[in-house]
Amino acid sequence: MQGSHTQPRLSVIGLGKLGAPMAAVFGSKGYEVVGLDLNPDFVAAVNAGRAPVEEPQLQDYFDRSCGRIRATTDYGEAVAASDVTFIIVPTPSGADHTFSNRYVLDAVERIGAALRKKDNYHLVVVTSTVMPGSMGGEIRYALERSSGRSVGAEIGLCYNPEFIALGSVVKDMLNPDMLLIGESDARAGDLLEAIHRSYVESDPEYHRMNWVNAELCKISVNTFVTTKISYANMIADMCDHLPGADADVVSRALGADSRIGHKYLKPAIGYGGPCFPRDNKAFAALGRKLGAHCDLAEATDRINDHQVQRMVGAVAACAEPGVRIAVLGLAYKPDTSVVEESQGIALVIRLAQLGYEVCVFDPLANPAAAAVLRGRAQAAACAREALAGAAVAVMTTPWPQFRAIDWAGCGVRAVVDPWSIVTVPSDGPRIVRLGRGDWRHAALARDAAA
Image (cartoon, rainbow, N blue to C red; front, side, top):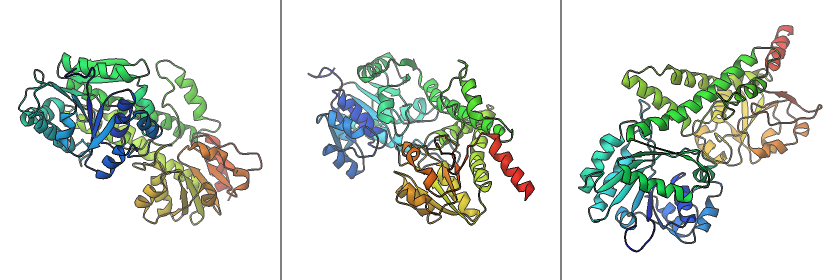
């Protein structure tokens, strides 16, 4: 491309949970990368060759980069040393559930100011999730105003959101099903597609379109997945009320139909994390704003909100308030310490409100959970400690290491296992699997006899 180098130089604005893996993947594939973050600790870590955040495989990919990644807090330095700039900063949800672009706009304006000192073509790529209408509205306006250039002829502007999950960010970046590019023009799209083709290890579909279609597609993907999760849990709720019914059996058969598929059709607990809940709410909010009917998205949320009550019901069927309950798993999914919108956290809070004594353990998320729970539960240093003296254990995150627990010798009388990962010998505790009607009807029979 420009100058003597044969491939574009890249800059990544934001070195958090998604930006740091992006920089590491680029660097591992031979690109010269400048990362930018306003957190000096993140910058220092990257410049020392250390991953600034926890994520599986991330340190390995920093090591593979062989010094091709450096970091700074100076936008002018990052833009001057690159030909393509990726923006991957937070877009927090507002009171109306739509996403705020304030951090994106701040980054765009700083990039634009730096571009005034450059003459060559530059591509700006927004990877952060934004609401439909943002790219062609305030983001384009901010970039043109701050840079003094026109999008299209003098600078490129693309929307290129990621479809990844915490705990597998590096793997997902290298092996996408689909790459979505909302482009200002063909030149910008061609350059961005070429970058992706140079590093991906799968054979993804490339979908190039205008900005608004790409913006809508991004939140539509997550909303469809959340609907599928809630559909599986709706079936499980029905199975809870039907003696002999088994949601796992039903969902496996459903998923065999090619029109439906197995992915995410898993009855367990509700969805959580930093993306699914907020994207679903944003989709519904957008529909209301536009006057479109998005009842399905709203129903999906209502079903998801009900899943904690289903777990509470399973606990109550096994033990009265006042006894000790062990909750294993506080992160919203394995391989991450993130507890945002965690079903485990929601369950602990509800059990504490009902008068249960709760002890918790998570392999990574104990510190993050403590800040949210604020004394509502006792934190244990390991699973065995959490189970000591507990009447019931609840598996809210399917960490692989929980499979190895000596359930027969742990002393609990019941294990609530929504994920169906526990195998217990016949002389071990009772297993309660949500989505199987027999446990609920056995509890009702006991109550009637009492």
